[in-house]
Image 1 (cartoon, rainbow, N blue to C red):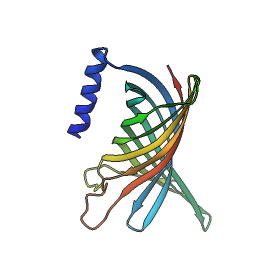
Image 2 (image 1 turned 135 degrees about the vertical axis):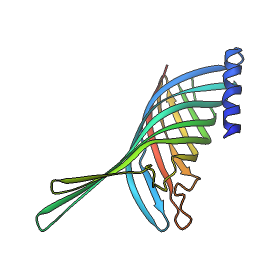
Image 3 (image 1 turned 90 degrees about the vertical axis):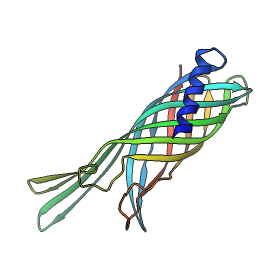
Image 4 (image 1 turned 60 degrees about the vertical axis):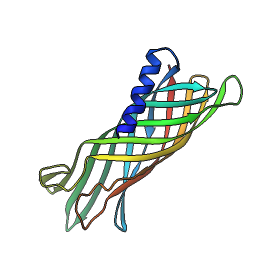
Length: 200
């Protein structure tokens, strides 16, 4: 993490000094997440909105740094003997991607940019709301007695296709850390993403 922060500080210093060019982009993504616990997996719907700046260093080589707000959701319901039970899961996160990239200009208006790099992630909140009939209980994922870790580190790779000011991009993120602090259980996450962006 210290290396990632050092990279961000270096980029910011060079930008202030005027030695690199930066281009900003706002975007929204569809980003489902799979939670893998041992041999079991659970699929969540995911969405994010974010902002990034790409710093061009030399002949198409750049680093994109930014932040995004992401939400994971999952809902299930069943009915037994006329009684309906519902389980709703929600998680809210802030991600900080630092993506190294290389822009390949096809023509004046079209550019393809592969990217790869780490993404730091911090879970702000998460809970499970269980409703049976008229009774509802809520479990906090990160409460005092929880084994869930808020911090995650992803390896991210993908590509962006830019036409004029518009960006269509996609890729995959692989969670590298065990999110369950218990000695006899593991929990990791992964998922693909597709997004639309607009360059400012």
